[in-house]
Image (tube, rainbow, N blue to C red; front, top):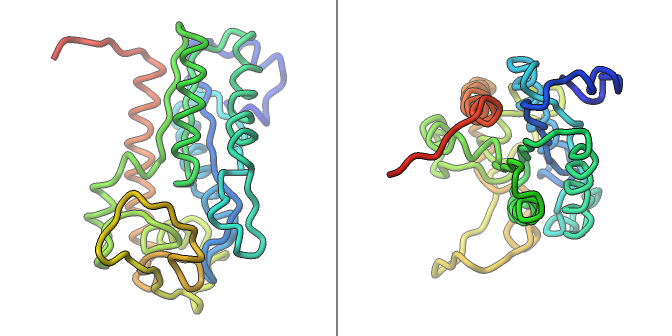
Length: 247
């Protein structure tokens, strides 16, 4: 059930064993070829497909689109919530629904910058509501191998306005992709460092990171279908229940 389309009586009748699915995205620069709403558009498509396939098990909230995007603010049009405000929005959604008997919540993420604050807020909520179930993951986390197998460029993972993300947008929203402006972009550290925080104006020339020129709608279709399948399995397991057994 889509929360935005329901009445309060519809929600009142929705079974409480279902999962409240909360998509999180962003409104931030995605290079010269993708719209600022890219992350939100993709994660919304994944979440809406899951709701279509599990309508009796999923209560889908609207996508929380104001992400943790401070590392993109040097590029015009990018918007960001500060960490407390961003995490507070997720917490407010959960705390609004808890008194109505919902006990299972899953944050499905579409923006890499949201990963750490999403983890922090669900841990905070779990510590406060011990009998409830909380989970979070990016749709891309479920399909790392499928992404690597699909991409033909040297970068075999999801980055930013890259081969994978551009392919997804070419599949889902081709009318929004500026094909003629696709370019390969991004810098790597030498020698390699893995723990230093960089903003995107330090790492790129025009905001994208990866090999967008290699993107195709066919690749996007494969990644999207795999992400829906794997995320669906996760949400279905949370909805139907699972048990913990010894190793």
